[in-house]
Length: 274
Length: 351
Figure 1 (cartoon, chains in turn orange, green):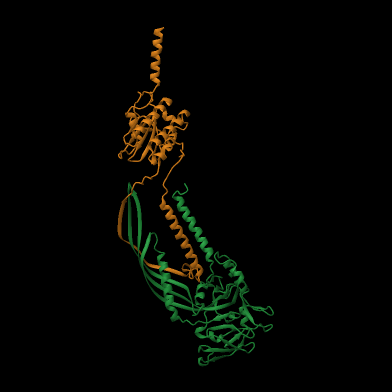
Figure 2 (cartoon, rainbow over the protein chains, first blue to last red; figure 1 turned 90 degrees about the horizontal axis):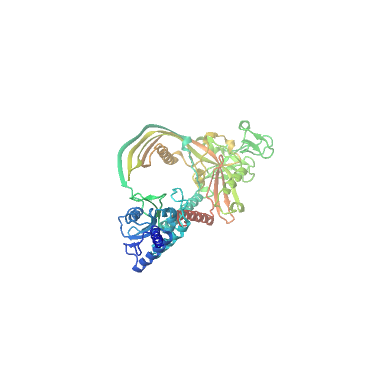
């Protein structure tokens, strides 16, 4: 009986160990390299992540940096996730939230089984959920909002549109600064057009005659003796075409399907500029 | 035979030219005669008496006194009048004496439509104008509506023109991230002969000159050799601008049209500039002609008078129009707002 009890206990330990995320209690998941969070906020986020992981068996990592050399933040976040060995289970399921304060970009990526639940489209919603606070500088609240939103998707299971490049995402909310130059240009062009119309018509009404008084086509004939077009000069100029500027205020870059990290693992992702 | 009046062979009433039927009609008995038939009838004649400038009634101008062949009354006209009507018996008279020699017209274009048709065409024309004050041409009245043969000089000539200009051809293409612009500059040279027909200018100075020029062009190919009877029933004026005086005006016209014609031969360029032209006119052939114009005044309900002329052959109308400024401003504001709104929309104002 004691042997049976011990066997049962050992089996339980093994079972528990395979199910419970490979997390030692207190293992860090918030890496505030950009130093935008207070210690208290980091602790709050760690607790929130622990709850998330416990409930949904998916890892969750938060990384902040100040690094202007990062040109592909999605790939950077995915590689970081892989290199640090994050993730739950064989599939290394989980997600990473990455904020780069130098390039002002926020990225959410999901791996393993999690990428089918947190698809590209759903990750857009996750990022949207925390975007306002992020733009306002309330970083901890922003991360908490994103974690809550991610948590709201987890019970729904796999997204039927996951990995479907033809699935079109409609942003929940997209904030753009209005280019005021269009307003000024519109007013100026409107005034000019109205002015030109007024002057033209008033001039027509004040004129004695409004039409041609001699028809050259019907009443003339031309016989050219000399008809020369001589090339006398050629000039060449060139200019470098600038890359189109990135628009401020939260433009979104959309991946149509799963992306692949440097290690070859696929991720769902969402990226936005704030 | 200084004054002639054409009489109906049936009843002796005045014969006038009818634009509607293009015949010479008697308004009393309804007889209608063609030009050929009229040649067989001798017109009634009257004499002319010239009153010297010192005895002239107005501003020391010489006036001519004519005796009406119908009633014997004296008819006083301005020096340029060649057809009018007797003030007393209203018989149309033609002052044949003023159309002799160098003043005998080469061509005439008869009126194509009558006074009623001219008025109808005028009111149809103004109805199409959006910015005339509403009801303006319903509340007033046309005055002094008369058919007038105005004198014109018609010039045919040959010219030799030499033309130079510069023209640019621009080509733009991209290679990689670089955009290239190539500009080719050409020297344009043209010279040759340009023949002009039917250059026309009014040969009468005075207030109506601008209006008389503005109703052009006339379809001069339809002009016929001048015959006196066509003036019967209408006013007619003789010229007071001679060929030498009008020649500089025609020279300007020829240069202007020659440049237009040679500009049109320069094709396939993105811009043409620095045009220069020299024109030498030769083989000038002038024809003195009388062309039909309906001239009238419109007095609006506000008391303002507007002067109009209508081409008696084609119906083209010239004259200043009254303007409803409030309505025009309103439409201009609407256009400006629509354009401003569209541009603002492009900027995502309502996105």
